[in-house]
Length: 136
Image 1 (cartoon, one colour):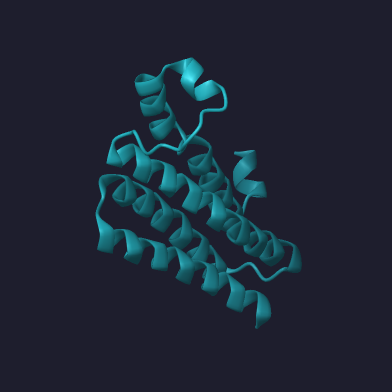
Image 2 (cartoon, rainbow, N blue to C red):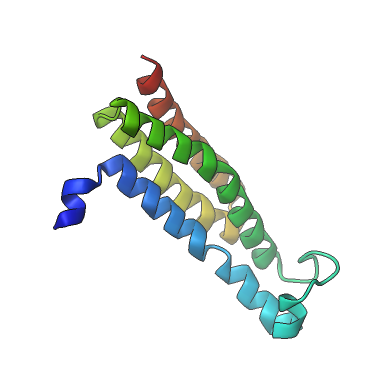
């Protein structure tokens, strides 16, 4: 497959992370549309999602958290790639980031506080692994 020849593990995990970010808005938006109607969501509603169930509010926060963390991850993966620093350690870091973000989103939406925090930290460690390979 052509993609196997072009994409490193690091780049593949970046694409998968972007795909996760592209779909993570759906749970809270669908709940909001069910509660407020399409017009109530498509316009510029006042307020936030305070009137929605806790799980929908957590889904919105999980999405926002991934948006905030995707940019540094992308920069690290791309710099490692273009600088020739990408290796088995950066691949491990990228895999750790992606799978930690999958777990973090799931447990955040489910409302599992400590596991959510550990998953976040695992993703952060993944970024550090890539960062250190770029510097050293």
